[in-house]
Length: 461
Ligand SMILES: Cc1ncc(COP(=O)(O)O)c(C=O)c1O
Image 1 (tube, rainbow, N blue to C red):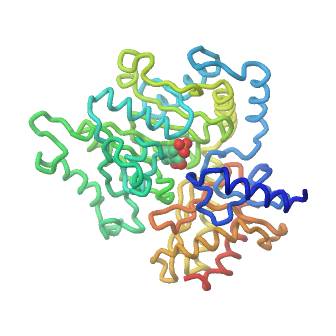
Image 2: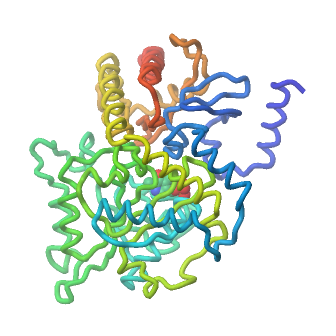
Image 3: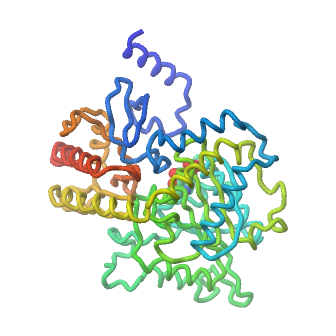
């Protein structure tokens, strides 16, 4: 069987036996890849594709990062499997490292509970809040994404993810995110004086706004789920004073802040935790994805001691067969060790600034780019009609497809581009390149994007 026949057979089997319930069939002809290295994926014909999304920011430290992969190979020979009711060294050391990272960043002592995927860790965080407060109503942001399990979908704003399944608990009260390019209140940052925060504060003015019992001095909604930079929402970076102002209100109103770092944690934005850019102290932090550089998945939740002490969260409060699997904890420890030997606070800021400057140049050449911005190496290109404002999903879709078709003529030969699409109008390229990306690769990304915007920019309106 030649390559083409094999692919036809695989597609036939996929069409018959794979569920279409995941996101593969968002594409009309999903792509096969067979190899990966550094910033590149390779298709079945070994053609290269520069990856600007790195498995939705799970592979922050490059595909097949040798040091991290090596740790797994060694662990496979020693203790690859162990029921999670027993202890192993890597689990304990990993929990200690993460808890100390939170203590350093937020000045609070706490503990870590591991799980397998991001959504499951979000579920654990919901248990922690419900258990500690005895209440089950949450707030979250419009445009926020916290996963697709039943509980996590209730705090994820898109109704699309809930529509078929009814309500599992209570959907969150969704608050507008400070998406200043498209301010939900039609304001301008220069003159708004954080109108959005003022509006939020008003919810607690009297009992009649329905959020606060002024006699009991108690909120009805007990936790606010935040992403410091919205991920799926389109890599939206809030203005600098937003979180400090919000956090003050949450503290005054006894509402816990749950910081979802699943996509932005582990130096995507140039800090260990993205929320560190804003100097606020969450009560709970949820993490996953890049913690193992996309190898053996593992996720987790850190909470301050009063919420997760053994008395509050006793044995059996949560459990999953694979929650602290030795391969995952080993890969995560190796990832933290890798991070310790880099200087990501400096290099991610530098590379991000360079990438952003080059994106600004790209914007100046193409009227279909309405906005570019970013924090560290979490970058965005908001694609619009030539008025630089009206969302242009059709152009995004065309460029996205052309990237995966490959064969873009570049100074390094024909190449493909792996992009990710996000944003409220699905008109934003959310760029999450490897934190190890080189200047030459950034230039290559710009060269390819320039070609694609030139080719399709006037054609697709
Ligand atoms: C911010 C955020 N939270 C939660 C999740 C869910 O994580 P998982 O897909 O591992 O369940 C994601 C995944 O994209 C995410 O970006």
